[in-house]
Image 1 (cartoon, rainbow, N blue to C red):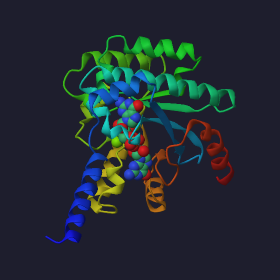
Image 2: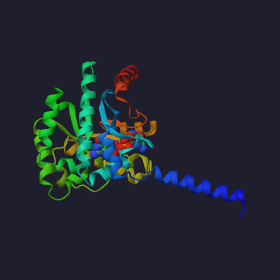
Image 3: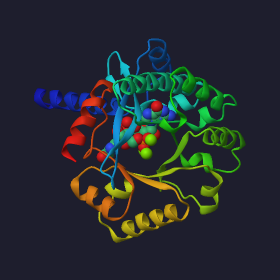
Image 4: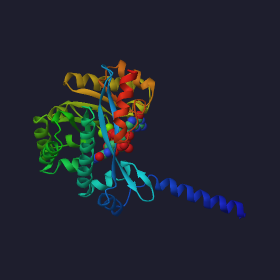
Length: 280
Ligand code: C2E
Ligand code: MG
Ligand code: MG
Ligand code: MG
């Protein structure tokens, strides 16, 4: 074996190891360390009203600051955290940070909706709704300003505790969005069980098989189902102008995606809104 080949092979192994590492799930101790050190960060992605062309609100998206890997995406630690109670700590950290940031925006004259992702594990906690009510009171936030994003998992068999929490929250005016709609197969019957205000059409609808007729009719039937049930729709994954036109023409109510705005740091949200308002 030639020395050059050898170096080349070692290099390749190094590269693929690094690539693998960039996708691998974090270890439990890394998640615990991040929670303890307050290294759970929150970014905010803008959501806009497609009809009024107005800024509607933001979705809180968590990140982890890792000493060696830098900012780590939630895909690499949420699933792992959901295997234990760690997700409860992450959820609480995200709620506190996001509500604190909301309060700052509010004091800066911004009265917007804040959406937060809630894992089914957190919803299973008997005290979940009470914790949210307590936080709303603490930050003097109106329930209408808060939207909880839940996934279709909560529609599975009889999730009594989840449903009880969602019903209590909804009765007080907290809004509920069904996230990643279209990833699994929800029936109308199941949809009607939940107190949902929004359906978030999964980004795979728009990004994979773009323009495919099958895909278009799937989008269409989801939109008309939502209309029938009096549920508003949010398109996610609006990555370019063609998807933006498509979702507007098809009658989605709201949209979110890289074309509209990337997830931002809290302090940039006020400027982003000003800019959006000035170009629309
Ligand atoms: P999600 O709730 O469906 O959030 C949307 C994801 O799509 C975000 O990824 C966002 O950055 C990404 N995205 C937005 N616009 C575009 C686009 O135009 N194109 C593409 N390709 N992607 C786009 P992110 O931030 O990596 O979050 C991934 C998932 O992690 C979220 O999916 C959510 O399920 C979960 N997650 C994030 N934050 C939290 C949290 O605080 N708690 C819980 N339980 N889950 C969270
Ligand atoms: Mg979400
Ligand atoms: Mg989603
Ligand atoms: Mg998703």
